[in-house]
Length: 189
Image (cartoon, rainbow, N blue to C red; front, top):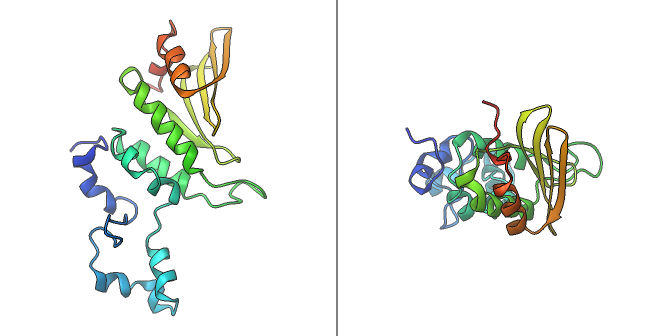
């Protein structure tokens, strides 16, 4: 089975974790009768609210759906991203934000630039709603990137040397792809 999330592999992903809205506004793999008789509707909720509860794919994922389809992620990374996107406001205490669509978009654009020279990172959600990616080789070799609205912020720790930067996506990608230690290839092997 193909474990990459390319367009041909998306046919089965709607059953992996949630039902994904189709382009026509309904849910993939669910006929209209099933949508209207969801458990939320049978609990007496209005139909519109019941449908929104049934369609539980997070907005930050839906807003970037085409880019995610083209990202060529493993299913594991895709599922982890969806789990992060499902965290509600307040997930880490008052003021913590859910995953922001703009941060996902910036991560996907960065990934598109580096994926041929990189292994998939570990991703995490920060309390400000931004996505963080980490490539890790050891306690002395680590790359962290935060995907903020204005810029990418990165810290590269390589055996006592530190490179920190805040720049636009393309320049950051170029710096990290061309670094002699190839930090985008670091992974938990």
